[in-house]
Structures are given as structure tokens and as C-alpha cells.
Image 1 (cartoon, helix red, strand yellow):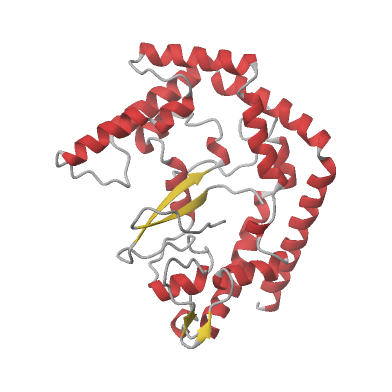
Image 2 (cartoon, rainbow, N blue to C red; image 1 turned 120 degrees about the vertical axis):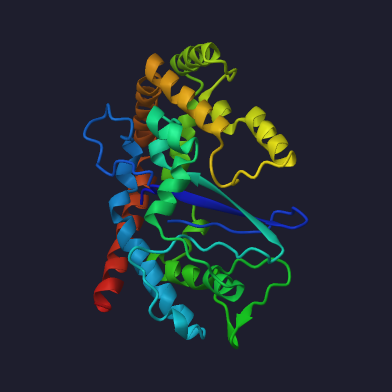
Length: 320
């Protein structure tokens, strides 16, 4: 299913060793379907991984997870609201682990595009979109571990005398819906979407679009070779770190004025150079080629997703 805004959670122990886990699942962004192949939201591979069904699967997942949590002794969660479904659980602060989340959203496949949105959210629109759609809930450590099985170090593997299922209650729910944990299975749609970008960026027309965009950015006072460089913003992050060391009280979860300014220039240059139109056309062409070469495994993926949606709907119907 298409992921409108998905957090990839990286859990870092205090010693900065990579430990664990991952989650699935606005600035108000348009939720309307693309109406033509000229729409930059249109991706041929999306036909094999539909976002329309994500709500059904997510609601069924959390319905089963809630039942599992009550079974493990968390009676207070019996009335947990799962519509809309909560955001993917985050490990609570103060437990010796730092959690960082990176958000991906198909709507920003080519980076920021709307200057007004960029001026408000910088490069963080995907995160804000996700948080708008999925209510954030604070969990205790025992609740978090029971939900996710995201153990680090000596975290307890049992709770209230019950052993926590593999990958927690959410993992148990996924196995009931998908037959396996999706994280353990290669997703050809995601792989081919990534491959399309890698191949696309090697195309001479894409490189030409990058150069035109970079020239526009230089006129605005920025020196980045590609939009990805601007979004990563190593120079900007260095400045932001220096500001914090000098006593800045800026909320690290909010975009700085410098980030907003850079993102706005980025979006304007994309509009002025026709960047998105150019790279999207290349992306569509390559995706169509990849579909032709990989149709069998893509059809299997679509069938796998369709089966999961049917099971999810049956789960919800049984409880209605």
C-alpha cells in the first residue's frame, strides 16, 4: 500500500551504536488522486501498491494490537482509539536511547515544490503531514516494548508475566494480516521505485535539469549541485549546530529560519526551471520500463497486498 508519509525509526543507544527498529504505516497536502501522467504525484509503480487500502490495514493492525496489549495485561488500553490510528510508537525519552526518525513521502519524491509550503515548513513537510494524520501518543517503556518488541540491551522480554511476541503486538498483528512480517519480505515496488530514481539521475536530461536548478540557486545565493544536497544541507546543519552551541533556544523539531529560506528558494527554482516536470517524465518512463521487465513479481506483490486487505477487512467486519 502506498505510504503517504512513513517514518523510518532509527534507535541509537547512548553509546551511539545502532540498535533497532522500524515502523510502517498534513501540512495539508492534497489527498486527491493524480488525474493524469503529467501530475508529479503519478507513479506507474503505484498501481501495484495502493495507498487507498492503507487505512483498512492500519486500522485492523491496531485493532489486533490493542487486543494483544489487553491480553498482556494492559487493561487500560481496552478503549484505545484506533480510528484514526496512532502514530508508530516512539521509545520514551529518558530510557538511555535516542530515537531519530526520517520521514518519506511520495508527494515529495522530487523534494519541495510549493514555495508557500516551503516557507512554512522548510524541508519537514513530510514529518508534519504524518503527525497531522496520525495522532502522537506517549507510551511507557513497557507499553512501547510490548507494542514493538524493539528491545535494546537488557530490556525485559516479558511484561506482567507474559512473554512479548516477536516484534511485539504490532508484529503479531502484521503476521495475522500479511502471513509474515512485511519487514522480513522484499518489497519489489519500493526496490523498483528506488532503482528508478538511481537510473533517472544518471539520465543526461535529469543532469541538465540539476544544472539549471543549481544555476538558479546560485543567483539566490546558494551553492548546491542538486536538490538533494540542499535538502540535506550539511552547511546549514553546521550553522544550526553552531547556533545551538552559542545558546540558541530554537526547537530542534521545528525548521529554522535558514531552512525555510533555503527550501523556499529551492521550490522557486524548481518552478522557474521546470525541474519537476522534466525529472518526473524521466521517472515515469523508467518506471514503465521496469514494470515491463518485472511484471510477474509486481503482480505477486499486488496479489499479496490484496490478500492482506481482504484479511484486514474480515478482521474489522468480525468486530463490528
